[in-house]
Amino acid sequence: MNDRHPSPDSLASLIARHLDGELSGDEEQRLNSLVAADRGVAEKVVRAALLHDRLRDMFREDAVGADLPTASPVRSARSRWAVALLAIAVVVVLAVLPRASNSGSAAHAALDRIVAAAASASDRTYRITVLDHGGGETIPPVPAAGGGRKPGVDGARLFIRGADRFVLVRRFGDGTEFVTGSDGTIGWAVPPRGRVHLSRDPRRFRRGVPGEHEEVPFLDVRSGLDGLRRGYDLALSTAAEGGEQLEAVRRAGRRRGPQRVHVSFDATGVATRILIEGLAIEDGMPRAVRLDLLSQDDLGDDFFNHEAHHASDRPLEWE
Image 1 (cartoon, rainbow, N blue to C red):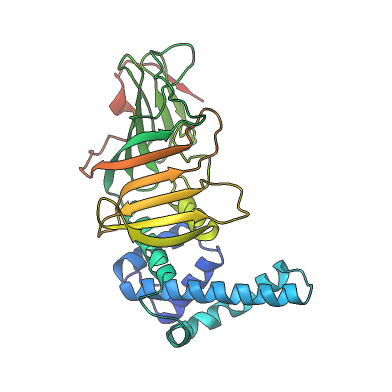
Image 2 (tube, rainbow, N blue to C red; image 1 turned 90 degrees about the vertical axis):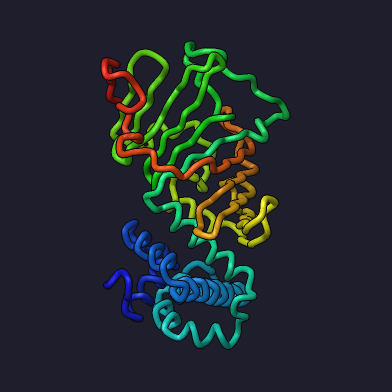
């Protein structure tokens, strides 16, 4: 398939398998790139998703009315009709749905843009602010390294490149830093002193990042997309600071994930503010956090490697 100009049949198949959750990571990224580059592709994805949801609800209602199990008829009907329906989606949707005025359509298109921008190789620097520590109390900073305690995320700096590289800088009360990160291949942690910890699991040291254990982690674009698209009601509004804001509210019956996510974004789809509310209170994690974009300056080739954050004579320990 030509990435810039896919054939109609190839694009329809790609969208159908996206709706069925069957795309590989590379295929998902390809579709995101097409959406970001071509408004027509974005409209086709949005309209196909709306039609897909309507048909799924219709089959579910029919199955419930007939006192039949809902999973099997819906799943088989979806797989049987997906490609054929996408082939006529534009004609059908134009006939039965409003075009640009549909708020759900616009919200899903905005989500595609945000995800495509987040998956790009550009660098972003965010400041994390804890809005609700849970329990109604403000947790004092950890005074210094030692005793196995780690500093909290309030006031931390989060540096991101694409979907798989990050550096999180947290500070103890005495100003010393505890730095964790991943270069996309290995995970690493640099305490103020002692051994530098390395892992071949790039996700190993994401613990302590708000949302990482929730299903809408802002460090994992693909998981975040799946969580918001499948488990949340989406809408667009005007952000308090100007520009657009995507609002995601967790649907009734869904147990995991924060209750609400608000993403303010610029014209290119870059998230300028991320507000996550209603996080599960576990392991000392906060209940609500906000990320504010500080910079999009290039951080350099080596910034996401652990060597950039400690002296060359520090001992290394693989886990």
